[in-house]
Length: 331
Image (cartoon, rainbow, N blue to C red; front, side, top):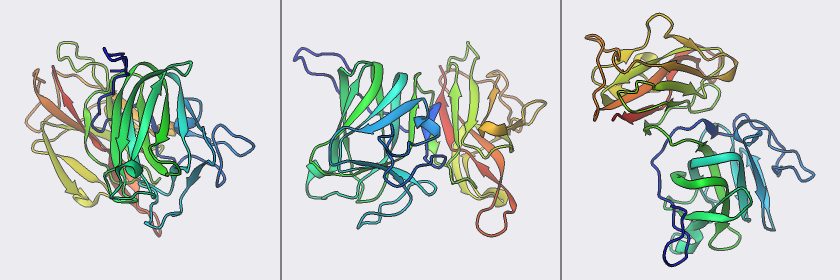
């Protein structure tokens, strides 16, 4: 991965299933004028989220336009995947540069310039580069979804990756991006079920940090992209599921079977001004309806956070919502 083989060619990085990472960008907290670029070149910069200090994004060819927008500029109706905005690289090559090494990157991608009969119109070359711009690995993004439909793509990055260069296989193609995620450490688990949008037009995520080794017992759960100043708690189950709007919720319950709740002393959390909350969990005492259960190496557990929210459209009314679910395989 990212190393030179016997032929001298850079190895292609392997794909990753949907994951949750500490750096994420749904573009709902971004602000810019139409056509704004980041870094700014005489135009307003994108402000907030992943591209506020943690990363920068710029066009590397002309004609170019890197744009945050919420309207359709495509004959096939390509718009945002989540909320009201997405980022588009229109008719250009572009680069994302990080301020620290990253080991995983992914997101949801679409195009409005696809010819279903021509593979070249559906593919982009990704070059992973180090801190001084030297290529250290690569991957190919092939958009198999119909024009305007978003699909997940993610990659394990070579050690030392500080940037990603995107180049279309055919000139003057458009790449739309939404719900990007990056991680400086190997992601734990994989997203097993997508969240519904919250009242702030984001999809809340559940991720984990620490170790999946049962003996270490150092796993911490994180709920992120949650509305600010709201209460919530984590759920746990050995079984996945999918229920839309349980108990009148605005979200999706992605757990099934016996579901435990982290509602003991100090376990119900508030998202505060950051829209996030965390909880270290004891792998020897996972709450379950029949009593606490100990995790056994080789087991898969599913985690999700349930939190208060309000309805959208008309007068806001109290409701609840859920993060996406995270599947964790323990060792």
